Image (cartoon, rainbow, N blue to C red; front, side, top):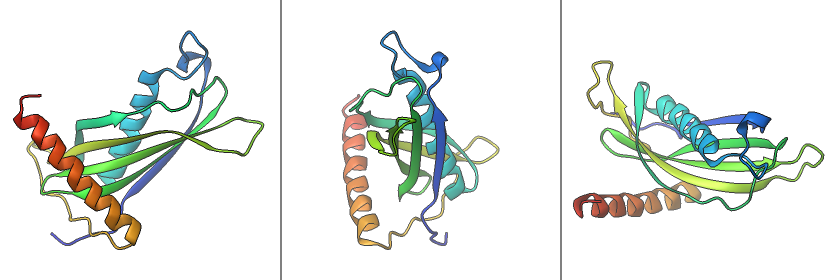
Length: 155
């Protein structure tokens, strides 16, 4: 399949009372749902078909996100295989009274493209162009090898 440009997606939320935990901060499960959805949008844009989440490598919670904060999630495709693709999602938080954005999370997800029959479908190749994209692509290959190692070890 012909290579394509880097697919991306962005979404913004305001942390509302139904989104917080007992400490008054954004609930981790809510954030994980938002990450999965924006990641799936970027993956779908690249694959031009349905995708399903296959893996979430890790998600570190570096800073709490308080009630009322504005949360922006930015997703980009970092690597493609035959039927799977990796997406990086960066999460930023800002207080309503400040323009300062703080990166609170970064997550890497793997999606598998599916045809409407539910079977894996080939995806267009992602061809990194910039030095940043090439570096991210190389790191994605390393993450893929680690995922395969864990899978083969039975984890």
